[in-house]
Length: 118
Figure 1: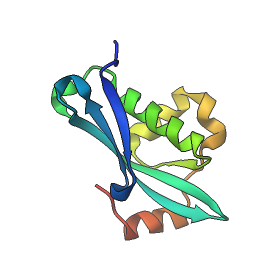
Figure 2: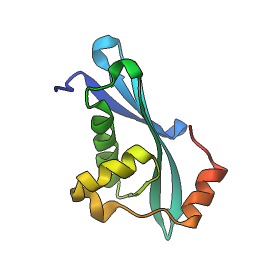
Figure 3: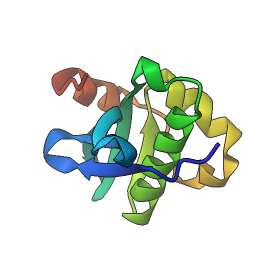
C-alpha cells in the first residue's frame, strides 16, 4: 500500500511525532509519544505510545509511523528504548535497527513514571 500522502512530523515541544494525512488537509491521524533520558551523555528515546486513528486501521500506517520515527532517532544519534507494546513487537522484525536499541532499565522506567506521556 502506498503511503505517499502521509508524512511524519516531529513535535519536540510535545514529546511526540505526528502522523499527518496530507490528502485530508494535513489532518493528524496518528502519533508516537516519547520521553527522553540522558544516559552517559547520550539521549535514550523511550517510545511509549503508538496510535493510529481507528478509521485508518489496516493500512500499515502504524508500521510506517514507527519506521519514520526510528529512522529519525537513529539519524540524530540517539538510542531507542522500546516501551510501547507495538514497538516492542515491531523491532525484532527489523533487525537492521538492533544496534540502536537499548532494553529498558529501572532508570528508564522511573523516568517514564515521572514524566508520563499518553
